[in-house]
Image (cartoon, rainbow, N blue to C red):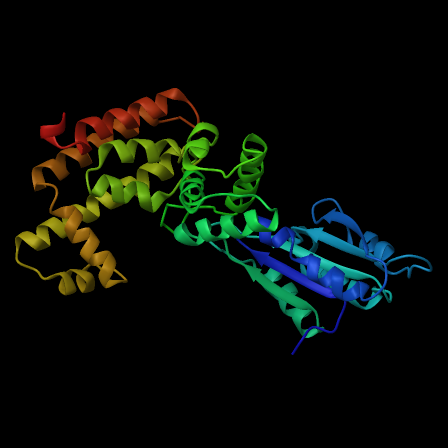
Amino acid sequence: MPPTAPLGYYWGDDAYGVSRGPDALAVRLAGDGPPLGRVQLTGATTSAGEIVEKVATATLFGGGTLVVVAEPAPLVENKALAALLMETFAAVASGNGLAFLDTVDGTKRRLASLEALRRAVSEAGGEVREFVAPRRDGMARWIGDRAREREIRISPAAAALLAERIGARVREDDIDRSRQSELAVAELEKLALYRLDGQIGPEDVKALVAEAVPGSNWAFLDAVGMRRAAEAAELADHLEDVPAQLFLVRLYGRIKQLIDVADLLASGTSEPDIMRMLKVKSAYRAQLLAQQARTWTLSELDDALAGLLDLDASLKGHAGGSDTRRRATVSLWIAEKVRRPDKR
């Protein structure tokens, strides 16, 4: 059933798509008349009362007003505030509109209060849309589509390289992709200014676009497990916003898990039984852990685990995320414990 109310809720991990979600609502509300003016508010700095003031007055001349509220979580942080916000729906005057923008991170954790707001908009007849950030090859196609919208010429190879440079090549689901699309558009428009009269090629992307690798805990741990030391060191640098002790807990957990898997493999345990005994949730993950465990000897894993005690001692009391000490000590542990002996 198509939306009928002058309301919208746009959410997802693609900030670019979310920010443009209300465009279709504005067109629908304007109809054949003048375009709607927009008022941008944020949940942290506005109130239900201010929203009512903006949406309750019908415009006598010209287009109506579309009030767009970004990140509305503070407006629904308790039941009383949520009830006040829901009351604003009925206050929207004819010709006006009200939209909410909710950008989520890579974990896609959802507050129950925001889920309730989304349902309320839908049940009131408003438009609800989720915007999912493009992944890998999908990002290259997405860049091509945005280029055509802007009449920018870019070769498929250049679009693929641009997607890679902004971090879309990372497969893991635990990274924050919310700004990748915005970054892709900004880089595309920069490239267009550089190559005004021709097609953007891979050499242009190499010259102008710096590589951005998003931080992924899973990618880092898998690189450690597979003993890809250079990749692990690079990915560790992108996890500097993770508290040092949490970083170590996750790293300890993976090494300990590999020791358990290696012990089971040595005793002839099958991968399906490993999955059951270690309560691994997917066959793929159990297979991957077995593959990683086979790249180590048990003594090497024990040595890596013992090395984490020294790493922990070095990082005790270290609260910062960008301190060179953390980078140096983590890099040293990777070089001494993760890198294969024949590569040192």
